[in-house]
Image 1 (cartoon, rainbow, N blue to C red):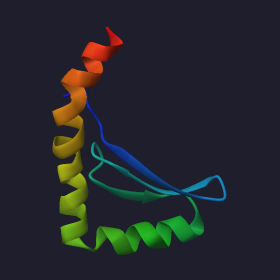
Image 2 (cartoon, rainbow, N blue to C red):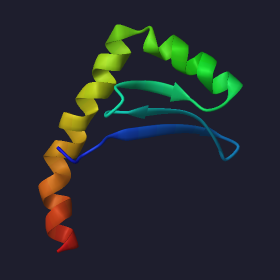
Image 3 (cartoon, one colour):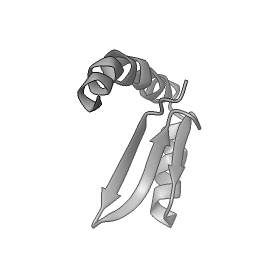
Image 4 (tube, rainbow, N blue to C red):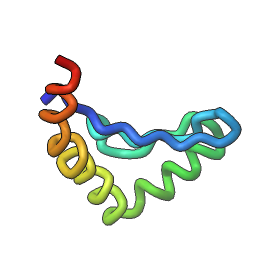
Amino acid sequence: KDIEFIRSYYFNKLELTRFSSSVGKHVGFTERGVKIAAAWNKDASLLSAMKAQKEVYCLNHIQIEYSNML
């Protein structure tokens, strides 16, 4: 429930866009990033794949990571 998958895209140390599983879509942070995020958000298969990453990566590895922290 408290797990969030985030994938950020940078260019020259400036964050252009970010996908957050809690938001469920890409968000742009620059003028160019807003355009890129809008294009990516129109692609239903890309959004589905990104939303699935939370389950594929985060939920499958959380127990291992949690055990390592303790």
